[in-house]
Length: 274
Image (cartoon, rainbow, N blue to C red; front, side):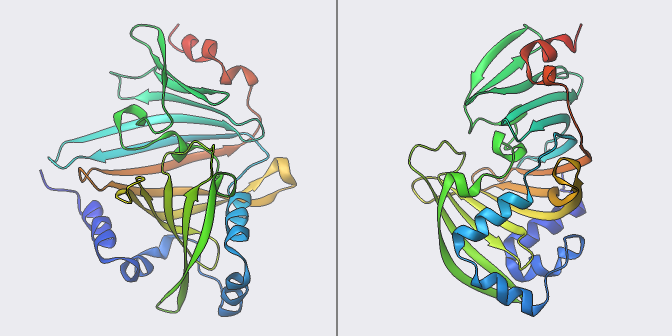
């Protein structure tokens, strides 16, 4: 089975690197003017991480319909749809699976530092790991959570790459002692507007586990923060290096508005099938 043309183009972006990525970024926020790029370069690596976290965190509750398309190396394809609920102020997270019908009604709930998976067929909850795959895809819990880069990682600057007039800043991140993350090491490419356009996650050995190209962002007004401008990922391509699996994730119908506290409970998810 051949890959769709859109996926082939995205895979080509990964293979070629940042020059192709810069050309493909028409749907992402426009890069800043040269003077803004110069100001960005003056920020320390730690300040850059804190700024990214601030832009991608919400005072309001968050809800989105997430649509995923996974294509494996053998050409097999699966389509999934989920509702993701977040409350950044208390670190609450719930994922409710709506499609396909064979697994609809299941989901994931984070309670404290523990992530629980619900199996609707048996009505049982099972504790899973933070690195565990969501819905048997290459996605993990952190993909749907708020950005906590400064909290979780130490960072060092790896310089800049200038592509077609756009300055991409490279940052290398290593997990802080005592923090639990999906990837103990990360490498980020950040544009002058503080958008992460590419990121690679590594194993402790230094082997690349997954590389993501963030295709586009969506700008939102946060009602809980006096209409502050915040940013949420719109579409990202995730590629698992070992198996060659590709996952396109789209965040649609994003809402920043109050959610019932009952949503972040086992009872709420169990009741969806009643």
